[in-house]
Structure formats: C-alpha cells, structure tokens
Image (cartoon, rainbow, N blue to C red):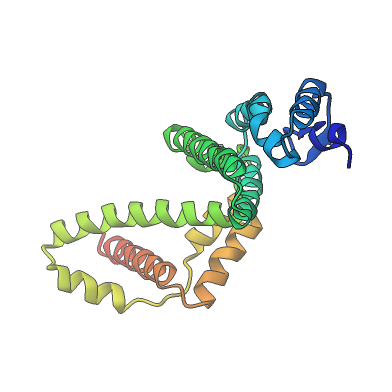
Length: 227
C-alpha cells in the first residue's frame, strides 16, 4: 500500500467502515516527514491530529441518531473496534473508539429519557425502533409497578400484614391472565411470545407478576359477587 493509499482513508459515518476520501494534505505531510528520516509509523503518529475532523464527524453522527436500534449498532461497532485497538495497544484508536462508545451511551440515555417522559412510553419506544425483547422488559416493569400500587392499596384496606399478602400471592397460579396477554398482543405477537417464553423458562419476575395479577382478579371477582 502506498503512502497515499495508507492515509487516504476515513470512516463512513453511517457504517463505520473505512472508505476512500481525499486527505492529500496528510499524505503530503507524511511523505515530507519520511524524507526527513521518520518511519511510516512515526509519521502516522505525528499526523494523527489531521484525522480529528473525521472522528468528530463520527461522534456528531452518533449524537444525531434517532432510533435506539441505530445507536446500538453504532455502539456495537465502536466496542468491537475498541477491543481490537486495545489488543493492538493503539492509544490513538483506543481514545477514538472510547469517545464513540461514550457518545453512543449518552445518545441512548437521551432517547430513553424521551421515551420515559412521553405520555405513552411503549408507543414512543416502538417509534424509536426498540427491540421486542426490550419492549417486553418495559412491559414487565410497567405492569409490575401498577400491581405494586394496587396491592399496597389492597393491603391497606384489608389490613393485611406483609406476610398475609405474600401468602395470598404465592397461592395463585403462574398462568398468564388474559388481560396481560391481550395487553402484550396489542404491542405485537412477538412481545407476547417473548413474555410467555420467559414464563416457560422459569423467570421468577414474570411468574410473580402473573401471581399478583391473578390475585387482583380474584379479589375483584370476590368483591363483585358480594354486590
């Protein structure tokens, strides 16, 4: 590879892949340094600052991503390259990819904050390209929170102790109530299937949610029968 070929590269902002661009100024500077007695490696190190614009553009690209899936892709790419840079001991590349990973993490947190602040977090997550597995987890957290509030009220009204509530919950089946199934299905069949897969896999969190919801439904049924 010629000196021009070696340095006439930058990063494709969308894919992170190396592509040919015009960086003739750096190539000329490297040629000059090598004529002065520097090795190619030394010349590359001395002209590393001339790539700063490319690195900055990549970070700006990450900061402008609008979907969670795109941010994850950028972060995965940067993490893979960071790992290789660490193995090679390339300090310049390590710094570059660490900056990209940090930018991706920051952007991910920004998008998640927007989702959590929206009137309909699940809808916002879908619009931002959230993965079905993550949507399932968000539903688990949401339903869990709702049930906690409901059961705290039940305990207060019925004057149950924590142990009494726990015993009543544990006495319930772990089968998924229809109301949860329908709620998950409204998002997508895949989200519903992932929830059921977690249940079949012995996910204690999902089992507890089902037990709690079954208790709430049982108590409502009991209350209606007394009217």
